[in-house]
Image (cartoon, rainbow over all chains, first blue to last red; front, side, top):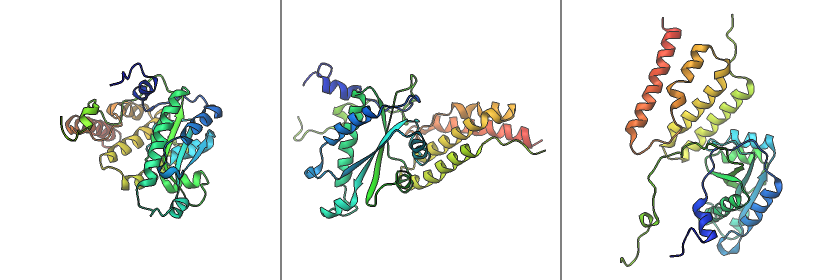
Length: 181
Length: 101
């Protein structure tokens, strides 16, 4: 097995944590653009690029987004909202309830979380928010469905405890070899 | 004499938006998140109320409620329930002292 401490990519994956408290220091737009450039390279099924990204560093917009996002515990000064272009998905033949486009949201999220770390920012994904309210707050085009918000900011020195305290799992806990042995 | 407001319009709007949108998100979320959402609302309300409350209410808000972590219900529920009960008892004692005698 490759040493996860010496390999820079594996080390970054192990080092990443969800940031649950952020300072009010503004986030540079250039840093958000670097993260968006990385997100563009996230894998997408069939190379279809059904995700759309909405980015903001606007304090008033961030305040409204947080107000309608119960899962947003931190007060991030910036965010990237990952949307699915439902109209484009329908043109490819996706029914509204199939999970394919959500998987692409997941790959984009993982990429964004790692890219944020690379530019020295903390990041926290938020799935608990009112889709309807966020669509209004961000003036989303018809057909763009907001699926996940990644809050971005500078980590506060003290971080709250994780939402649920659990034991540390290893890859072995999560994996079953077939055939066994 | 009318009691002074402990929330301004912005504080109240923020909490209102949180509660309404949490009602919607909770439809799709794990049930164990319900207490956490309510506790988050309680913490935010307490945080906004504290500076403008009476000394007695401010002290009550800073008691076991403040110490209650905003966690989802853990699999081992005993300690979580005991902490919540302690917060409830502390609040009840304040309410009784303020209104019950």
